[in-house]
Each structure stands twice: as C-alpha cells, then as structure tokens.
Length: 169
Length: 159
Length: 123
Image 1: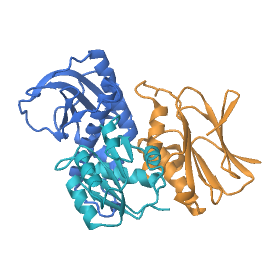
Image 2: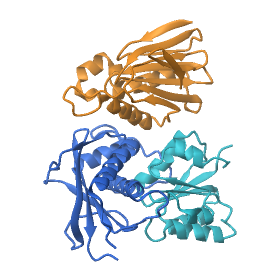
Image 3: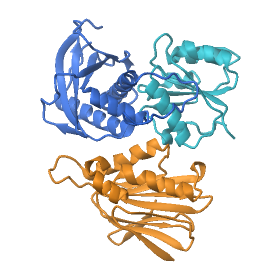
Image 4: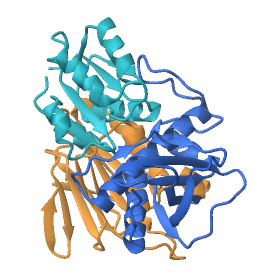
C-alpha cells in the first residue's frame, strides 16, 4: 500500500531524523541547506526499503569523504597516514577501510530509517525494513520522489531522498 | 577554599582538596570537568572551538582552545596524577546557541558534539550535561568532593 | 560482579563496535566479547563458547533474524536462561520481543546510558 505522505510533516520528520542520528551516533552537526547541493561526480548512494507500515525507500547520497569521516569517528580510526590502532575488539573481524566506511553508512541509514518511521508514524508501530544496501544501477524499482533534503555536515554535503517504490506489496 | 581560575583555551588539574577550579562566562564555549572519585583528583578545560585544524599555530600555542587538541592533553595530565577510568566521571557545561559570524552554523552545538567525539574516542561516558540554551554559564569544580556547580544570572545549580 | 563473556549479534561491523564501546563506557565489567553476524552464527558461537552469559542482538539480520534466534534460544533448555538484550533500529514498542523473553529492548542509536538502564539487574 502506498502511503500518501504529508509533504511538510515528512520533511520535518526526515530532517529531524537525520540531524538527531548524525548528532547522537556520529557526533556530527548536520545543518539543513537549500536544495540542489550534492555533487554528482563520485557520490555514493545507499538505500533502504521500508515495507511496513508503508512502502517507501530512503536513499542517502554522499561523497566518499563523508563515509570515511563517519567511519573514522565511530570506529575511532586514526586519520590516514598515521599509525592505526589495533582493533580493540577481541574476536572481531578486521575489514578494509572502504568496506568499513560502507558498513558505517549502511548502519547510519538503517538507524535513520527506524527513527523516521517512529517520528512520522508514531511509537508503538513495529516497522518492517529490508536490509540497507548500496545502489550502483537503476533496477527499475525506483518510484516517484516524494521528499528530498540537503545538508551540510560540517563541510561535507549529504542528501536524503524519500521516494515511493514500484512493484511492492 | 582556594580558587584556581581557568580562562578561555586553558585547562587545569588538581589534587589539592583545598582548591576549586573555576571558569567564567561560557557562552558557546564548553567546559569539560573530569573527576576521579577514588583519588579525589580533578580537572577542567574551557574549550572555545571544535577543531584545531582550522588554526594549527594557535593549537600549538594554546591547545586547550580546541576540543580535539586540548581534551586529550587534560586527560593525559589526569592519568599522570593517577586518575583511572573505572573511578572517573565526566561532566560538560556550556555550548550555548551562538551562530558563527557568517550565520551558517551553531558554534555552541558544534563544540558540544566535538567534545562528545573526543570522549567517544577515549571511551569516556558523560555523567552530567548542562548545555545549549542561550545563557552564559560559570562552572566550579570542588576538588575535595567533586561537587560541580553551575551559576548564571544569580541562580546556582549542580550537575 | 563482572558479567561473563558477552555475545554481540549484528550483521553490521559498525553496530557491533558501537555496542561494545557503549558497554565499556557504561562501566560494565565483562570477561570479554564474542561476535556473530546473524542468528545462525550466534547459535554456533553459543555451542562453542560456554563462557557467554549475556547476548545482545539486533533483529533485522540476514540468514536468521533476531526474533527467530530469540525463539530458538528460549526453546532450548541449555540456553533458555540466558538473558538477551535486543538492540535494534525498529525495536521500540514491540511487545512480542518482551513476550519472547527478551530482558530488555533498546532502540538505536544506543548510548552508554541506555545500556546501563537495560543491563540493570544483570550480574
């Protein structure tokens, strides 16, 4: 079922979700910006489909620098060129730098999605989310764009888009 | 009680139970207070800006001015006095809402987040926080017992 | 008294690290951490490592989700008594998780405070 999203409420809930999650999880300040800012070249796109209580997609578009910065903060990596810390977790798998950046972005998107669902639809709803993933090609499931917001995250651009999904039940 | 004043961009640590460390007029600046309840040693830093990379020369001359250059130094100084993680708490005050000169972002909010980033890196949790709003805060740490008092506009409260 | 080993179950490396760090920042003493990427691997870890005394798990995972994992855990007499804390982006208000025997449910983003609150009563 396709939810009919109220534009103003959607934008407010989505903006608050992005700002709250980036502040609480990555300790970064996301300042809303007028539309039209994320660079096309080199951008990465991560998406998560929500199936319940409504069917829609959230997509994050960011530069590799944003992913690297978010990962280095959360995972407490040393900046490039300096001696790295050994992983502090006993038994955890060590993964390459870009893979960890990707994983961090997917987890951020996952948490933004859960936060948005609660803000927009209310607490007490148990949503059904698919696993977040990076999008490299158009796969025919893209629907209509419903809301698009741009942010400046301490000098790095970020865009989040809420859209409908095709061929969903 | 002997009062030890900490100015903007400065920090101080103490193990003298007669001392109180105090900093004044925190607007967008943030004061971070760290105290070891077992040894009764503590420190306070008055941070003005988040990131030393915007002014490396200033960071070298006055590391306490920036969250990411000053806070690690104060933490190291407390470790040298014997402060250890299981016995330590951390509190933060300040970060009032003040827009940067160009009006693009809230410096107070950025300072608060920068401190939280550094605490995350050091795996130190926050036990108390009094930040935001639009008031100017003065913070006092009593080394004898760790009591942390905030005052503003003739009001006083503890965190 | 420190907890034994804590098993953290989440398909995200980032999330596993955040959970571990928040437990440490909350001042909770443990005898170490084990990790699994899904419910299936978690069950294997529990068979192999008998020192695990607490499980912290996500819900939305590939191969075996958190609800299925929790059901299997609670239906096995060998693991039914293990306390399980759910940490998930979609967990708020899910009465089913409580009725399945979860000790606590935390909604992401987590924090040391939320961990401390959820771990209350565990030893």
